[in-house]
Length: 206
Ligand code: SAH
Image (cartoon, rainbow, N blue to C red; front, side, top):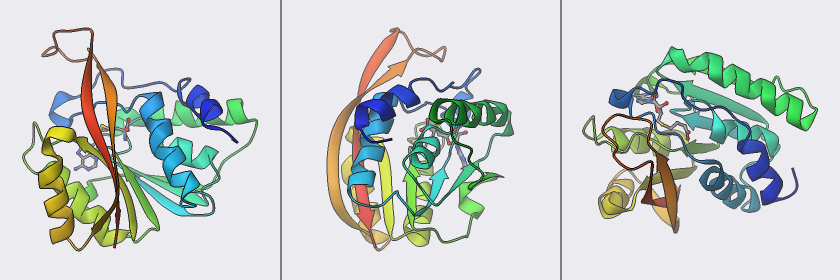
């Protein structure tokens, strides 16, 4: 994968949640935003040959992108096993599209809160904490604890709080980028078909 356009094209072929569970805030990262995150990390030399964890992996767009960009290994951690058939299908799409086989990944069913294996980089679009209070900062705390480099996506409206928490957990905000992310109408409480929300990508080092 040698440019961001090819990466976006690959990611746009992946399947997403069929019946998203709103209590788990199953909102997928769209292909353009995912490619932005991955390209940033790739250009910083933090994907290729690195051990990466995808926290709250869902249907796997971030981890699959990392595999496509030459990660040494990707660990997908997800609490909801209902999404695993879609994640497996997406790994198959990755193989078909890149004409490569991948066995350098692990899929772990479980709560990020209970995960305890150090990695080099965490990529995450965590639940924003609108349904379960503080789940966003719970993900953040765990990520900073287990990885020296974390790429994490948050609602821009909460970013000051998230940055304060990152510092409290021993992290340093090394980069900050605001992006517009389309949120498709997949859940009954949404009114418009596609709503755009402002999100901020943080790179946190520790
Ligand atoms: N990473 C995916 C999904 C983001 S949505 C993407 O970027 O498209 C957030 C995901 O976190 C959902 O799949 C949800 O099921 C999962 N999740 C929520 N709480 C979790 C927890 N405590 N531990 C692990 N996964 C969790």
